[in-house]
Length: 174
Ligand SMILES: Cc1cc2nc3c(=O)[nH]c(=O)nc-3n(C[C@H](O)[C@H](O)[C@H](O)COP(=O)(O)O)c2cc1C
Image 1 (tube, protein in one colour):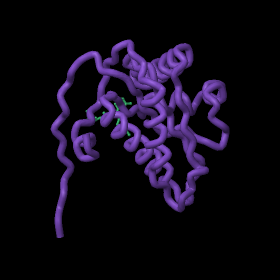
Image 2 (cartoon, rainbow, N blue to C red):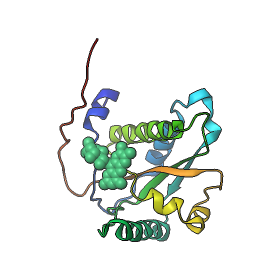
Image 3 (tube, helix red, strand yellow):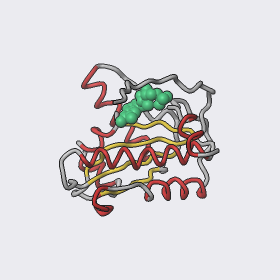
Image 4 (cartoon, rainbow, N blue to C red):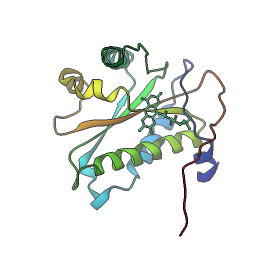
């Protein structure tokens, strides 16, 4: 699968089967993350946390469920049964907001690499505030105080075959 095919094939998967991704696939996903461009080459401002420990996954997503329930009264577990979740954190970048661009680019590199290997994914902003607000959870995840968790992504093999969504973003040409 070439890069454009992987980009066009990517979709969010919200129901995963029991299979874990292989170590080789995980290494390739991390390699793709580390190949991402970062403004002023400040790679030191970013940190990646791979979570595969089942107790830790349960802790993160139970906490996220409670935070969402308190905020909007809806109870939903956003783990969707995925066995691998990767969190991208950042220290302050050279300009406010650039951290989010970096995290988004790192995440997109990972999901495109995963798609090219037949691995499904869903980008997760929802659980992030639950981690960021819980110092003990952040510490237990090995995320140092200087880093703020910004975006996460879940990987696995979808248990249902859902179609790729049609999207458009407005475009003008001058
Ligand atoms: C920054 C960002 C945060 C997202 N957060 C969530 C989330 O918390 N939960 C979720 O189910 N999907 C989340 N998504 C997935 C989007 O809902 C999804 O990409 C969008 O609906 C388009 O569908 P598709 O990915 O299948 O093309 C997020 C996507 C992005 C880019």
